[in-house]
Image 1 (tube, one colour):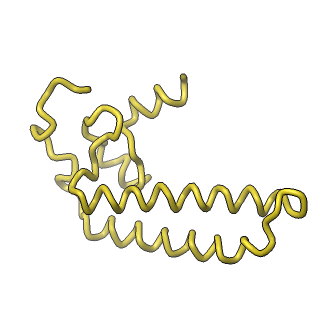
Image 2 (spheres, one colour):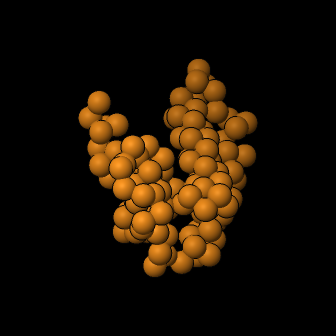
Length: 110
């Protein structure tokens, strides 16, 4: 955990949270539609590509839903691992990002 006060910086400052929420909602709708389209055809023994795409869409839905939950809880823009601020540039590129770049690098290199 970080030793500095978690409220000393506002990670969401300067971000258009309304626009981010719209973007996340749109991505969620797209992924849910993709799941509906793939579900009837996705079976590991029949169509492994569709099965893999379905799994990826489900993971994306989980990540987007978690980001929307963080928005509602007022914790959007805070790293879920260290509670540090996630850079606004990272959130602009990946609005559902749950972690800061340092924590993500640690996870990927572990």
